[in-house]
Amino acid sequence: MNLSRIKLTNFKNYSKADLTFDQKVNIIYGNNGSGKTNFLDAIHFLSVSKSYFGLSDKYLINGDEDFFRIEGYYEHDKKNDLLVIKYKRDQKRDIQINRKKLPRVSDLIGRFPVVLIAPDDINIVKGGSKERRDYFNKWLCQGNSDYLSKLMIYNRLLRQKDALLKGDFPPSRLAVESFNHKMAELATDLHKHILEAMAVFIPHTLAQYNLLSNGKNDIDIVYMSELSDANIPKLFDHMISAEIMAKRPLIGVQRDDYDFLIEERAFKKYGSQGQIKSLLYSLRLAEFAYLKEKLGQMPLLILDDFFEKLDNSRLSALLTMINQGDFGQVFLSDTELNRSKEIFQKRGISFGAYFVEDGTLERIE
Image 1 (cartoon, helix red, strand yellow):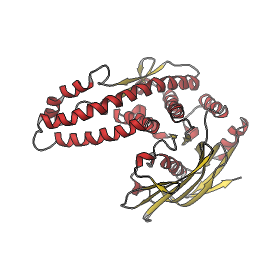
Image 2 (cartoon, helix red, strand yellow):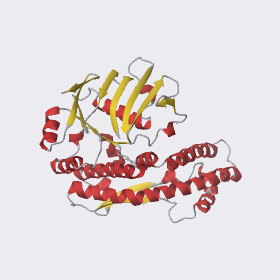
Image 3 (tube, rainbow, N blue to C red):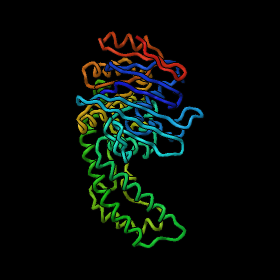
Image 4 (cartoon, one colour):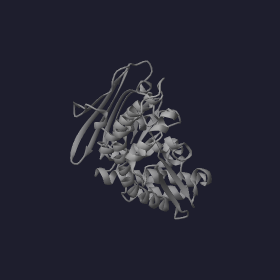
């Protein structure tokens, strides 16, 4: 899958932008604060209808304008698709593919897969369990429509159950049981999907880390869930009284966590800066491999602040993967062109270059 053209109107610091892409590797360069990351976020937004940085749509509108619009022209499977996402302040998002409106945002997820590597990824390792769950859920939803639909229903029930438990008066056991019966069924399927995905994802991560670090460290990922090896419906039923007393949900996939280990010790405590960077790249590259296998097409790969994350040996390993055709279309940002130009030309990798300055984009021939 390739993004052949993108048009921005009033998105972040871009009043207007219209660019075409005809190369496998595309370098977006310019000074810090010029809009490189904003442009890459626009590509990410097209794929999942959400800013990578979790910003509400109203904060993505340029200045005092009252709307933004993004158009993406995609080529894949010998056909072309036009994806348009429009948002007007205080209204619902409008998403169209080939001028046909999508009834639900979820209908977009997985159609135009994307993997983005950015500085904020450090929170996957250093942050709390929610950051790790969010990370895994995002790519699971892109690669598995059944997981996405059931997770949306589960989260809606979870919010309703939480409100019931936090009410002014203790709810009846029967009221909580009605939620738990539905949620246990969904949790069973979600947990199964996670286990199946981890069986593919973890080996990919270990293999990528081995390549990036030249096999210097032994790492592992452990999926931790109270639902593992349990009768999930009985577990939900058993927790009803405790949940009523605690006034909050105490069981479910929302309590899952993932432990990253290096030499059998916690990565967040014992991993060096270089080792953590290698892990983060390995996670994203494993995510790429998973989506490629599940969806049967190459996701777009976006690398923000590409050269700020990797030392020379790890950078060389990643560039070798790009050169060998392990990836499809790649977008990366850098503060200067000469550095990127020298590295890619040395390896015989053709690229397109685009200069960003104060919210304007220009292709450099």
